[in-house]
Length: 355
Image (cartoon, rainbow, N blue to C red):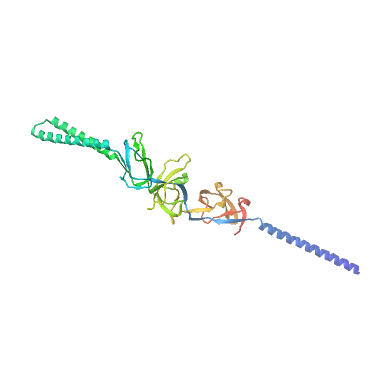
């Protein structure tokens, strides 16, 4: 009897164990289904599309050059008898900087002056005589012509005398001196005499790309820096924009800079121009992170999260500003774009946003 009871109890325990195991299996299957459902979404990071001020600046580099520079050459032949300046001297416009021997031209000027005075006296006498009928109209006209020709020769002689005193054509600095006292000058071919540069005003010549040149206009005020003075900032103005690109498809630009009184910036120094909108006037543009694009910016494809679903959209990208890209069309303010995790996505994939 006891044996039967033990058998019954054993069967009962086995049955209870089987029922428990079956219930546990169902619960595990349900839990697994829930986990699988939860794990079916792809974790992504996102950013919200917005319109914000963007620093639309770019920098171009070049070299400073003088606003005025000239290699002076001899206008007449002669011997240099005096040099009144040396290299590095500052000169004013019209200042005499060298003297050429003028013995011959001085004699010619004196002769021309004497001839003019004689011709003038003759004309005055003929004019008085004509009034009393002492000479004819033809004789008076000839005297007038002789006087005019003599005056022209005197004027030319005086110009030749003036040419013996070499004068600075503009204010600046004597950068080079090519002659010495005793140098015999030639007018053909002309002998180089001095190199004069004016660095009170400078030009910074730079090249910009096709996209950049479209943003510039004559008269725009820009920031200028010299590499040797990184902490100083100068003001420049765009004075020239090339109407045609060079062989590298860049456009030469010239920016005029008024130098400081001490002429800190020297011609030939390296400088840079910061082009762009003034501070506080940057344009407001719709931008998204560069990382939002599928593959690269050129793909023009991004994923937008709509009700926890990633939807691929085609956009039109504009300019790139560091890690931000301008969006010209395809998105609206407030859209949420995927910035990380795109590799695991396809169109209409369920996503979960992680912070």
